[in-house]
Amino acid sequence: MDVMPQQDPESGRPPEPSPQDPYVMPAEGATAVPPPSPTLRTTLRRAAFGAVAAGVLLAGALVAVEDREGDGPKEPGPVERAEAATTAGSPASLSDLTALIGDRQKWVESHPKDAPSLATLGTAYVEWARRSADTAYYARAEETLKRSLEARAGERGNGEAWVGLAALANARHDFLAAKRWGETVKRQQPKAWSVYPVLIDAYTGLGDLKAATAATEKFGELRKGVPALARTAELYRGQGWREDALATAREAADRATQPAEKAEALHRLGELAWERGEPEEAVAQFDAALRTDAGHHASLAGRARALVALERTDEALAAYQSALEKLPRPEYALELGELYESLGLDGDARTQYAALREMVAAAKRAGVDESLLLARFEADHGDPDEAVGLLRGQWRKQHRSAAVADALGWALHRAGKSEEGLEYAEQAVGTGVRNASYAYHLGMIQRELEDHGPARRNLEQAVRTNPAFSPLAAPLARQALEALGEPPPGGPGDMQPPPPPPAPEPKPEPKRETERETEREAERETERKTKPEAPAAPSKSPAPAPAASKDAEAGSAVPAEGGASKSP
Image (cartoon, rainbow, N blue to C red; front, side):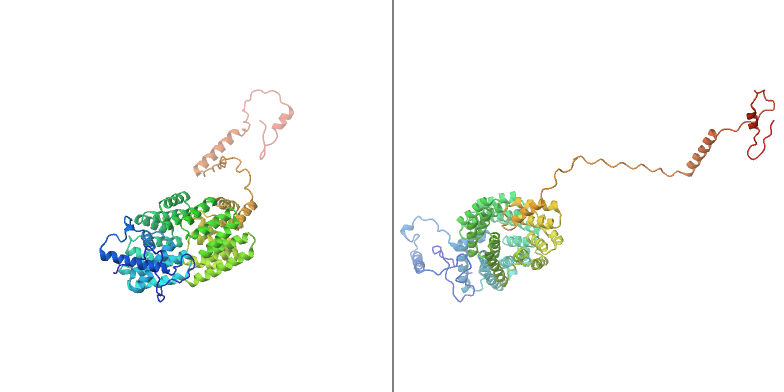
């Protein structure tokens, strides 16, 4: 194969692709750094560089110009930096990614059957679309990756095209398809580290924590360093292991060397600080990320979120507006709309909600499923029944992450089905993730069902985890707690266990017949002994007796019952 042409390291701009090339990036991107046309100065500089290089080769000289003697090796250009980042499994800066795309576009124009270059270009399109929120590039990525597989099938060693399709499916929130593509590569190339990040994302989207953990561990074995630390921190974060997540994320930030990689690590520290309810720390980390890489626009939105918690509202509004201008993601429109609503600016809120609907519709045309986000919006600001329908569809597609379970539980509650919603809300909180919104939703559902003790505990957990987790919901959580009041004073009066109940008296065992007969005989004998004896008959020669009264004599002559008694 021919040596891949590289961008002139001195120019800093991608080569101008042919207008007929169907894979040319449009002149105006949604955000970031669109590749501008080279200036006349750049063209002359390239020509001069080529002339000098030719002279060096012809003369066989080791040094072309006297004043460059002693210089070290050239710094890598943007294409080389992007390739190095991709090889390491780290993100490239948007400007370097732009340069890589331009370089591959020009190459495949003259080498249309170069499967590896087409796979690289298609995967770069996916990354561009994801990080610029320009969903139109997903269709371009899909077409390019299919061209790569036509040039060389995946079974013949083109696994990177399959990995690119898995990344595309994840970006479109089709986690089952991403899992199928990724597991196909893993079966054929179990030691190909590049497949594990897409598998981690797919398993996480499906709510398969066990598989996501195994994939993260395998990725750490095959690709050590900052990429593995970043993935491990995210795994700990999803399981609610805050201290482990923070320690691992800090190590990743300390070890990161390239600006884009460093900015991503600092952004992660900002997100963790925000979730802990530490907005000052969050702002500091997001600011550091933006200083490191001005193109890390997600940190603008993170900064805005933290500024709201600090009641620096004007700055927060400006940061949100800047984030939406540079990275128009629908979730940022939802957050800004809710901020406007919390400030009583209902007209501005409606404008943002309308923009959200337009973004979701555009994403759907590009094959991106934003049902989860749209359902979250409908549950609180639109039609809760519509939200339930959207989320049931996600559940049927096996999208059963904590985020989907939480949203479905809340939508069912808002639609008047709190008992059914309770099961899903408990499942979301049961994953262990420390999310104040999840605890709030579960507490409000339990309050509706008059389960006041658990409701109080979960609402307290929400405001303790992050007192400003939402400009609309956080005040409602505090109001609900006030309405529930404090638990009854006191508690158990006696902390000792209560005495056991008295044992019942044993029932007499049935007696055998011989025992009963013995008892009856004893009773008869007792009666005979206690019964007075009848007077004995007088003897024929009685001794002389004292004289008796007439009454006694008369009494002795009374006849006994049943017969006569004769006097002696």
